[in-house]
Amino acid sequence: EADIYQTPRYLVIGTGKKITLECSQTMGHDKMYWYQQDPGMELHLIHYSYGVNSTEKGDLSSESTVSRIRTEHFPLTLESARPSHTSQYLCASSAGRYNEQFFGPGTRLTVL
Amino acid sequence: ELKVEQNPLFLSMQEGKNYTIYCNYSTTSDRLYWYRQDPGKSLESLFVLLSNGAVKQEGRLMASLDTKARLSTLHITAAVHDLSATYFCAVVPSPYSGGGADGLTFGKGTHLIIQP
Image (tube, rainbow over all chains, first blue to last red; front, side, top):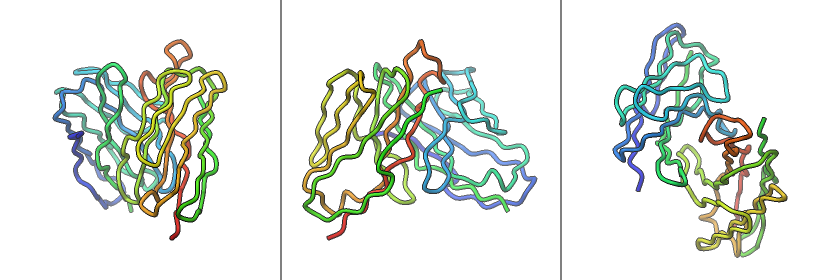
């Protein structure tokens, strides 16, 4: 069973605040990903990482940034949150030949 | 740009019936995945399909892949209420057709409601 954790699970904040969404995995996976999902909609890849010190932007443009200083940790930061950032953010990790991705429980962000 | 289309997007069916969800994708792909998502929850991996003609089954769900037609199907046999969820297919483009590495491109999802 996948062990991938996200905190907080729910976050309501005001416009202009800086926030960091945490993602950690205990499986030793090299590859990690962040997806954004609006309610009832598909997921969009916003960031990914192949390993420590590797980060790339995904298919959907995002104002967020990520870092990968440790293999198990892949935090996402918004320097100045806006209502348009309201969404669910899902973290995933993968490894192995088929790169099956395992998803965390998600962080539901609301920016007022 | 890789596009993934699912149909139907909404499906209401009765227990005991059979139905198929379709997933079409627009460019060459190495791998296709099916996921399940319950309301307010994360995604659960169902199937990984890696080659043309691949077929996988788990309980009442069976998934298949036709890479030449760029089509995958998820077949539900004798549906039960517990299968109510949203089902997503997701595709990784092949290395030589661009795309965000191993990042998944998702379909819009099929919202499935199974009524007693």
